[in-house]
Image (cartoon, rainbow, N blue to C red):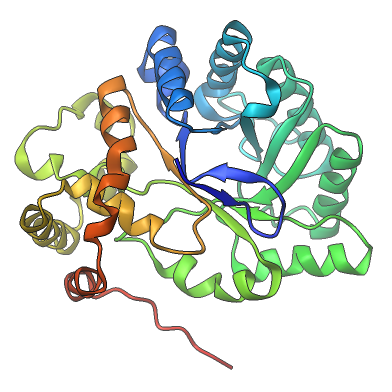
Length: 328
């Protein structure tokens, strides 16, 4: 397993990591969740991603119970949580957002669910236009000084919003965010390859990217009839619209699948390796509902040598979506 520094921090994260979104505490049994974590850990994965909103807190409870049962040394793994959406289905005015009250209480609640003394990474799950950015920065700074979190970051913030956080941190000698968790894949590139480029250059931000397979679209399963996600779609209409509602993307996936067959690799491995080729990607978060699925995804490194410059150019010809970066 390859390890990468998380931005300018000294923390080393596995290039492939395991996330619990839509699976732990919801789609899969606790036994399967345990098997997934064991398989990942034994393969060298050291980062496990979570959030207060995942399964309304149950995801963190499941992961915490597994960590306690397995008894791994605490310095061998990294755990994250995120605050913004709230834990309960219909949160009240002080049960969501990034105001100090919610962020601190959410951190304490996450630690209790995980049965841990501290979180390695703590994310602001979305920007909060109703909370001053200086309040967010001060809150995260204080949580670090209290030893409750080690590093803080953002998720799906704009480059401007992250820059403002760094401004307030520098102005007041506070600890700035070191990582961002954006969606990034072959079909969603504009933020990481466009908006965030100054952040990588000036602040050394790291990224823990999610949805590297575009919610399964880049596995090809929605094209060959192997998918059986009807129940999932019924529960998440927005996901169905994202996956099946864009014919242009589906045509690109068909061409990418043809290319992957020429190379003798799976489309899944091609998509994961494409993400790993980006030097600004600290870790690629994998999601899995079956151990066999995770095992297969963890083997993607075998395909890395096949992503030559020529192949990368062929992929660009298919995608035709490389962001145009404006240099001022």
